Image (cartoon, rainbow, N blue to C red; front, side):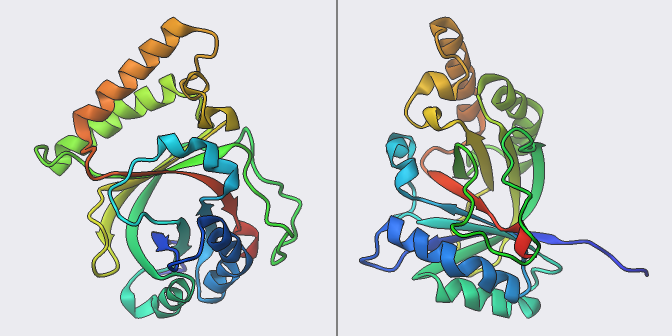
Length: 253
């Protein structure tokens, strides 16, 4: 066989050490974790941080885990097999009180072409401070309803809910990550991880979130459609929905 560019995507949830605020923890991760992951063999690193910028969106948080994860790392590897993941796991462990990781299958529904980060960064260089993606990112660990088969939940998600999410929200990036399997012992039994980016006003203005500013009728229609679709396949008792600031480090490798 010839050379292959096949890669596997990993999602890792990180818990902050006791006594360290989310803001302090996030700032520390931005300084050293991306390079540590790249040095360990990861590429296309993205961090989702719970910082002061997204604090106004606290009402949007849904919580299953207690305490809840304070940050998320997303990255790609040639193989997420445990045999080849040792240095990456060590980097994650060194930057958290505890972490959980999953192998996922990514589907990029809406690529961020509207507000991409600057491309004017030389490969291997680290902008100071790290460049934050415009707006904010809703980082969602979701679980399918237990009364549905996995196949039925995915069918609703892909054939119906995807359209609803596109048509009823002001999202400018939308990425679905179906969990293939957990990579770490004790990882919460989520079904998927979803990331959607919105304008900053959508943190605390529902009409902006649902693309219906100044239009109460449209707001109700979009909100009702979204809630109906979510309740059709999600278990709301086992979700962790987190407003976050998104930082991309693809320039590192």
